[in-house]
Image (cartoon, rainbow, N blue to C red; front, side, top):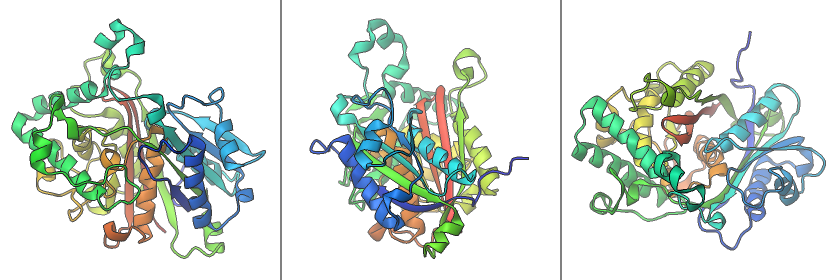
Length: 398
């Protein structure tokens, strides 16, 4: 009977490029920036890596959707190297593949790397003009803010939250990310923003204002994984192991039946339940030390608090306004600024989240370091709330 991957795989080293408008860097150069840091952290040579997975969701220059650009950039010659894409869960998907390869005993050292040069694509997060007038009118996927604004409408309708209270809650989510982003030297946006500015910003898709939407960034992040035994043999005293990685993808039930009321994300709940079982977590509100979740929009982070079973259903608004997810709260969330401020180069985001958790668990987070964290959670959400992908990973010291 399957027993899962809890504590069978350790993160030996991680790296993350600076996120932002990296016009001066190619995608390969960004990957090299992250990879060089990971190699130095792991204290191994590139010749030790036996298999690798490269994640990119919107790369305009990829060679036949292959991993050739990554293998070339990193000079990893002759090994198994695959390219993956699973929307905004792409980075976590590469980590899942590398983790499973080590857990199976197929290899001793595996690499997961994700990168994106979104600025070069011209992607703006709003309706693209090339899909045609008909699609732009009926397909909410073509406007991410509009799609996620519907999540706010469903949530308000279900729990009777006033427009003013919800606006203040999601505004606090954005305010918190900006406060945290100031402390992250690799973050794209490093400027504190007042609540007044956030609440009075131009509206993008009601109730989402300008500061409730994450920006468009370039960046790369990666992880080198091995077994805990090998990590310790290489001299690692504090070993970060992977407790769980779970993925859930929609079957289309949200748009083809009336079984969903639009107030939550089904796939996040499914992935979270399985991840908690795999990791042995029964009380996430008490056991999880920090979280990095998919705050592509501020409403998404708020609803995710309930979908991860940290806030009770209908209780996230109060928890957010009470500061439970602030840096000094019960379960700090987006301690590095999240997608909102650190950035969201799609293929790299899941690994960037793991990078922050990894740094926090090892006590290396500098001015944003939390006091003695032991369990960290990452969450990705791809697509739009009514049909998409969710991934949940749990990391901890072992």
